[in-house]
Length: 290
View 1 (cartoon, rainbow, N blue to C red):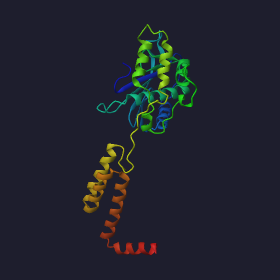
View 2 (cartoon, helix red, strand yellow):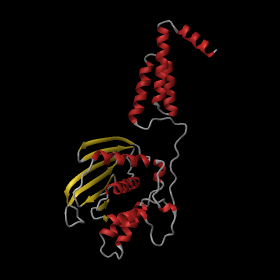
View 3 (cartoon, one colour):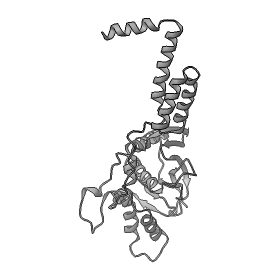
């Protein structure tokens, strides 16, 4: 299967010989993820034909394949730009809807710059031509009135993006009916409509989680661990200060900037005390403040 609980795959098909710059492609995708507020945390170039990009919620693997065989084409593709989006933690709850939205926007951006002959959309048989893909991500259905919200939806916040996603069950039903069922009377309209839905606002969005304004907790586990290591180290020299910092960590969350500033100030006063210059320093501060 091209998409599973934790993985979504798609790609761009090129029938003719092309030259690709894996670094430029990776940077382009990184810009799109930042625009979606899916912050890029690392881009690793593995070779001239492969790269891995890490973001807040996903790992995106980019691979350029030559003479790639596709089930929906009679001839092998000269080049196939494969995109595989997965969650780094297999134990985490699946975020399939968010993955579909990210993949669709990445494909649209690469389609505009690379102009492929075909686009494969999350299914081995879901092959759209250049014109069909443009129609899927640009135009509305015939029975819909023109409206600004039918255009590509920007995602100013990652949490807000989750509330603008299409119904995943309808998307899969349309793809299945288009490429598996032979009795469908108008299959092309259904698959382009399903892909187009990824770019539209949901008519009944779910309420996005509102972040706690009092929390200053770091977003990643390594940063939070660094705060606790710094707090424990600080306790070896100034136990009362470390205890106060530990209470703040427990009540408001671990913050590396606060821990660093506390450690710096503590080290300054300890140095002044060891050299017997505390009184002189306080007198100097008093003179400066008037």
